[in-house]
Image (cartoon, rainbow, N blue to C red):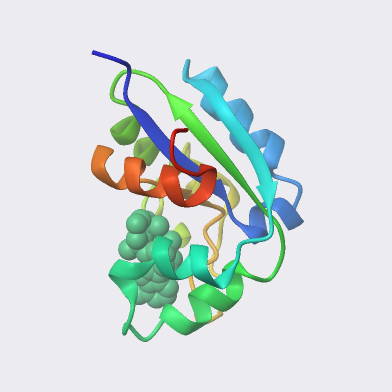
Amino acid sequence: TSPERTLVIVKPDGVRRGLTGEVLRRIEAKGYVLVGLRMVEATQEQLAAHYAEHEGKPFYGPLVEFMSSGPVVVALVEGHRVVEGFRSLAGSTEPTASAPGTIRGDLGRDWGLKVQQNIVHGSDSAESAARETEIWFGAGA
Ligand code: DAT
Ligand code: MG
């Protein structure tokens, strides 16, 4: 079987704060392989598709607005059990509660805003990864 893939996004807060290299460094240091990388200004269509599961939730509008507030860096990352492995590297959703040693736990905090600005996105399953890869890299990636 081909190695598993996950879709990682360095969110606008991470890019603005100059943490893109640090996030990619941690991914590579863990032993995962970058197989795709691009910087984009997310379109409304991409964000609606990417965050479809959250539509209707109170933080959805602010989330899409935040994700449109600057460029993001999208990475396709490969490795055995990389979906679970990157979620572990990233830490839990809320950066204040994220364990030290994780990206969100080491580098994130609560800024008192309507959305958790938590530096990174990582797919939550192999199925999500495939769906998200098509959104950000197009079919056939
Ligand atoms: P994760 O990014 O850890 O997979 P998620 O998929 O549940 O978390 O939510 C997507 C993003 O939406 C998350 O990274 C930050 C924001 N978010 C989630 N729950 C939130 C909440 N209760 N209040 C504010 N922002 C939230
Ligand atoms: Mg999620």
